[in-house]
Image 1 (cartoon, rainbow, N blue to C red):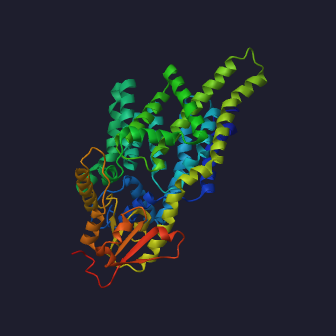
Image 2 (tube, one colour):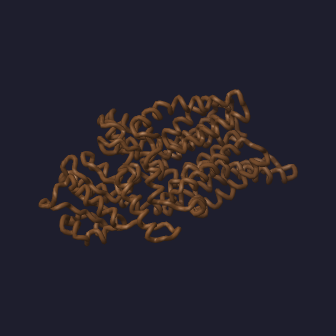
Image 3 (tube, rainbow, N blue to C red):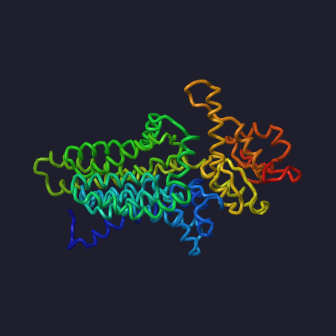
Length: 508
């Protein structure tokens, strides 16, 4: 290896700094790409900062965000004078740099320093990481906490592993999985210290667990039950679709193939990387067992750092084997062979970067809808009165722009009463179908919500709320009028405004 002086040499500094800098440059090059789901947490954060509590609609204690810690962090930034979307982007980009650094440190335990740097660069150039860094979501921070926990576990620093695992749990409920793995690792390798990760995680999570139990009646986000209802799918089908997403495109096919080689090498050597593989398999199994269809591509994003690390380990093994086969290689050939792995993996990252437009296209439809909803919300803000009911087909960006209105969330994530309406409707449809097949919902639940709340506005994209049928029903046709905006693609959106002469907005 090329080393000059101590571990603080210029080469060491370059290896440590280059991958995070590449991640920063890649994220800035892509620019903001905030997704609709992020705005749900933004609204929770804004209400928390304003003193209304960690709620979606003030006065309605519902846990509809799966990332309470992200909401708390954004609320702190907002209290300090930062706009919440900007703060989320700053946290996302910083977490993108940090996860690259953590992945590099994990890889450095099993491969050489330049090989580990190549792992970091490959991950930094991966378009999915840069898109997530700009998404406004908690995904990047969650990955930092999870992989940081795994790194501390492999170093057998179980107290730190537990602390980071507790943070991972507060960022995403599935963070509990990595805490369990840290405790299992301690039980196998240092039984007397097996309590440390659990105790440390408990200290971090206990205040939230108490608060959530008192405030919401439980710690499980209501979003999980709502998604299980409206996005239900079979476990095997979920597993297949997630795997397809994981191997999407030729670059991911190569990385996954190398990761399989790395997994095989780890099994033969009983290397610590098996812990990483166990977490990845457990995470995939958890996604399948959730019963929630993988309609959002970022569900598998937390697996990508693990794939790249295992791929680097696999490629390092292939390079070492090729070098060993050479009979008394010259120093020059030996250096070329040693450089094969880092250069090869960095080139894979470059090819992934060149494939960025294809990855961006996966998200483009959703981001286009976000832009439209922001325009609609900004238009309606001047027309709505505080407390008006607004019934929405997609809840995030639109709800964030209407902070003083009561949002009726059609997904039921933040509106348990709508969840119950949809659940009852599906049960009726299932009974009518008289089969084991999952029934589709009907327009009845939408009409029930409109009749009960008489919302000032009903807003949706064309595929949702059975809107093309709903506008023909006398209850809606006579009480609402459709308005349009001068926004590209507006023909695919419905904005229904309640007529002034209609019944009271507060419901019958």
